[in-house]
Image (cartoon, rainbow, N blue to C red; front, side):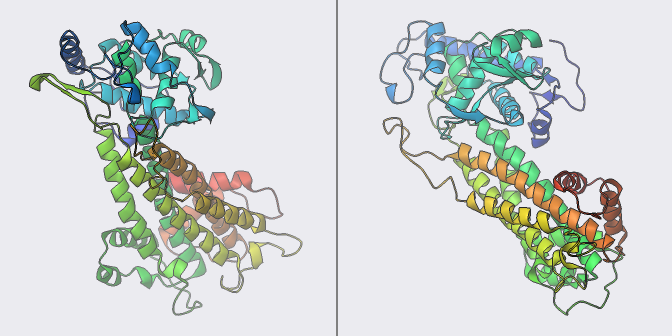
Length: 498
């Protein structure tokens, strides 16, 4: 397939980024340049040389898999492919979100394109062609322990690309072969090494962690902006973000967040009606959001390393005549990072919920009506929204137990330690959506607060945010269902386009 480079394309000869993964959910070109094909074909040629030598063992090409490595594999390459994928068809549960599956296959494609996996060039080309369509393999959520790669979910993806199992096209679930045909794609032809290379990496874990990180980062920045709007609407003193105070704290994340907040709060005028010291949900917000920023920078570094690394086993190094058997499919870095991401999400979600609680409480909101109701008793304002935020926070807290510490031996103790990175990453992805809803709930509360007597923000940036919310959300007067408004408010504040 001929493609043309564009701002939305992915070049397999260049570094992969989180932005590429976000765009993977929609059709776009993935470019396979001549240098990429050259290195893939060179790695493949070296594999052929090694396989021709009866004295050189190659895991998965000449052997059984996992704990059965001591036994010979199937006699033909086609049978070895079938053997690889068939026994991994043991996944259960609902299908993964389609954006995760597409992003995972982009991560897998980039890894294979580095030429260290010994795959056929047509595998990289076939995977790349898929991204120009809406084709998405149907992949069950449960079954991976994140060691030896995301074996079971990636096996379902590989089978769909061969025309087996099920897939989505234009969001409709179909038999995979029908979806391939309708998309104009040819079923992938795989041998044993191709099949093993497709499944023997932590691409689902990496993709889910990266997408969760992107979402949490956007909510984190949005929550900093919403905190500023809260300060301005209430008429609080912004001195808690003073650069000298924050510099003395000594943490780079806090310094960065306080700088963002000072920029957003520039021009605000304290009302003089608030107490000398605000509650911690305001006064300590640079420290809390700053600690989250420091943690997110750690997650950034792990995701960047994962996106730039090759996750497979074995790896083939023609220049050194080396077949290296090892553990580059072990998802411990992403497992730790996803668990940290979940903890950050819990703290940010708690902050958003506490700020909304402050805003609806007449004892603490500088005289605004309870629940921000336009006519308390006859109307109930944000009462239902606040109840929902309490439930969201409880759900996040229930899901924060670290997955990376839950190792269980499996596979006849061949996999005697496992990272459970897939569980950690998918959980972080789920929690990120709840954080987004918490940001939307707080944003809706701030829009309503001004309607029921809160002052118009005096800082230009805060006023711009309020105006962006007011442009798409009517006042809650009279009461109405607010579920859609919460999502709209989240989109406005998280987009940053105000």
